[in-house]
Structure formats: structure tokens, C-alpha cells
Length: 461
Image 1 (cartoon, rainbow, N blue to C red):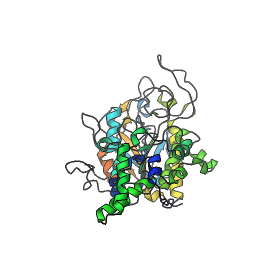
Image 2: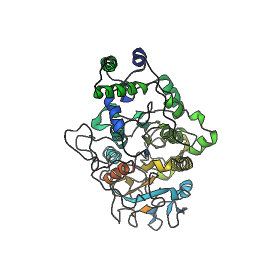
Image 3: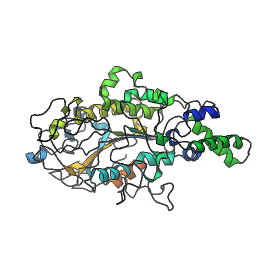
Image 4: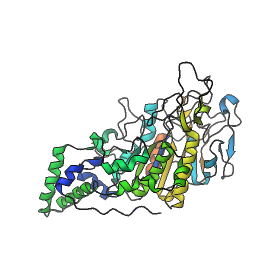
């Protein structure tokens, strides 16, 4: 299945445009669309599964079966369809799809703080003491390449992009992700009603000025002004197509497909991401983490932050364990825990992208802000650990079946060259056709490369 055809741009009146709001998606300014016309040289999109809270590398893609019991945990490795590659036994669906992905096992960060670590991983730039300044990947791609199709924002957050971060950084609200919060099954209704966050609208007087200027541009032959006229009309057109309502209509998917992703809010977000990419989005960030157990049942702030009862929390929140620590309350959630949900949704996503011919043009990234401690603590959990971790990537020229780097026997340190968030930033931009060293952050007063990292050796074919 190919991407949806470019939407027809209808003519709208000045009054109609004001009724829906020129500032929708923060794209009211013609300069944004001017940037889109310059665009990138490669038609590649990205789905970034941010595993918020920090997943354990031991219980995902870097098991240590020969380590002492307090290190290796209670689960065994499972063989995969790539000879010699083993992952956690609780990821059986992904075990049969490792020939579609690459694992980087020598990931290494700097910070054990959720906020600092997340900002580092999501932007590829370590935040300064004053907080996050540089934008997350999707926001910068939005600023550099603009929207790919009229009526489709360049960057989406499901439900946010991503937890613990200030996604647009210095770029400001105009390049924030368009967040689809709450139940993704209701997203089509959100677009149908044009429910927008207040920060997405520009000043009303600015709208009037821009639209008044459209009439003036018609009478001017200057090529530059004519170009501005075209971009202004496209900005209004973003508000008037049905592309987004169609892309977010999960009811159009067969029940069998929806069930493969997981018949719950978390799996449906991954399915929605696939449909948004098909609909023309450039970048979708998913805050992918099931919420329950000891950390509450909010729908937005899910977590992999399993300091306590890791092995219960990773699998299910349906039943309350008998050893809940004093002072804590177990919040039940009638659905799968993080591991089976990731296994279902990620395997379904890879299958669908591959079968639809989209995996070659869609980069898929799954990673959190750090790994977890080698030693299981007294609460049967693992704590924050930036010294080692792992990440999974697929599509867009990724070397299928590759295992890059390795940690030591206890999973405590990379025993090969460590690959940092800066290197992942450079690699993500490379996959999207953006040169990380000669492309500069927009709006800064001096040239600043968007990444100081190096493209990861062996990651691309």
C-alpha cells in the first residue's frame, strides 16, 4: 500500500479560514511552508518508540544467561530467526522478526535522571544546566523539512513527544508536535471537530494581517511576494482537507489487524502511527509505556521505571502481587504489561510496514533514556543505569539482522565502542537524508551542526 495521494487543496474564503484558525498545527506562517519547499533530499519518515522510564536491557534485547542470578534475573534467553542472536524469552514475536531489525547493545548515556536522560536521548544533544534548549528529533525535522503533504502536520506525539522533555526546545510552539492524547480510537473525532490546543493558535490579529495580505499579493508581480502568496494559501489549505480525519480513522482497519497490535490504548497508538506515516507524516514519536502497578494508571505518563517488582510489572498489572512494599498501592490494569505490549505492537508494525512496501522508507527506533542496574535490588527491581543499555532500529537502510556492539558478562559496561545519544542523533538524521554535520539549527545566530555524533558503524547497509 503506497502513501495516500496528495490531498486536493480547496479554495476557502477569508471568513472560513478565520473560523478554523490559521494557526492550526503552528503552521500559519508562510515561512514554514517555504522551508518545506526547500525540503530534504530523501523521502524517509520515522516512528520513534520512546520507552519512557528506561527499559532493562537484561529483560529485552541483551540477556545475560551466564551471569550470577542476581544479575541475569529469572527469565531465560530465546533463540531468534537470526542464528546466534538471543533475546529475552518474553519477546517471542520479536524473536521471529530479528531479521528485520538491528540491535545496538553498546549504547551508553550520561545521566541517570529521567528528565536529563530523556532530553539527551530524544534530541541527541546533552541539555545544559538551564534545561533543554535543542529540540527533539521530530521537531527539528519539522522545522527543516516542513510538512510532506498539505493537511498533514510533520510531527505527531502519541500521546506526547516525549515524556520528561520539552520537545520543540528553542524552536517554540510553532514546531511542537501535534499531540493526539487520550484514546487513539477517538482521534478521528478530534480532527473532525478541529479541537486544538490554545497554544497552537497564533495571535488573531496576526491571522487577520496575513489573510489581508493575501489580497495585496495578488496584485503584485514580484516573484518573492508571489512565492509568499503560494505558501500562505497552502497554510490555509492545511486546515481544510480531510486527510487527517481519514488517517486517524482506526475503524477503517480490520479487527484482526487491530488485535495484532494489541486491543488497548497502547497498541492502538502504534497502529495509529503507521496510519499517520501512510497519510504523510514525517515523524511520529510514541511515548510507549503501559501504566499501572506501583506508579498509577494515568494514560499519558506510562513508564518502564521498574524499581520494584520488575518481573510482575513487565508482564501484567491485572493481579496484585503478594509482596507489594509497605506504603505502596498496586494499581490494576486489565491488559498486558510493557513486554508483551511491546512484543505485539512492534512486531505488528514491522510486519505491516514490510508488507506494504514502507519499511524501506520508514525508520523505526525503539529505545529509552537509560538501561537498568546489573544487580537486582531488594525490591525485585532494577534502578536507573546510564552506563549501559540497548536500542533497536529497523527500516530505511538499517542493516537487517545486525547486532552492533556488546556489553561485558554482567551487562555493566560496553566492552566494544560505546554509542552515545549523539551518535544515535547523527544516525537518525542520516537515515532521513539530513547531513547532521552540515545542516544547522534554524533561528540560531551562529551556525550550529545538528549533531556532534558519528553515524554508528555497521548500522546501515
